[in-house]
Length: 89
Image 1 (tube, rainbow, N blue to C red):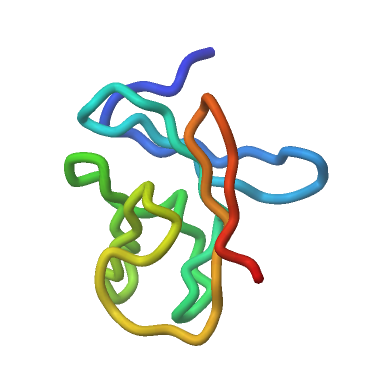
Image 2 (image 1 turned 135 degrees about the vertical axis):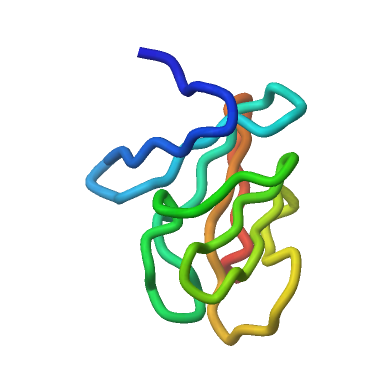
């Protein structure tokens, strides 16, 4: 089963919930499956280009390992399919 363009896919990897999505560029991304704002699953979000937007308050997450807009106190791990990184200190 592949990750279809413009669709999110909830998954579990190493016991952690993740949201997979294929951006407009064709790259597959993986994010921790929770919004930093209200903990809503990001796998319920909407894809806009290479950005994943939370369905609850529209916070946007881009592959650069941080929210595209909005302020928050938490940090989320993010990775592209070819390699992972984390904003966690």
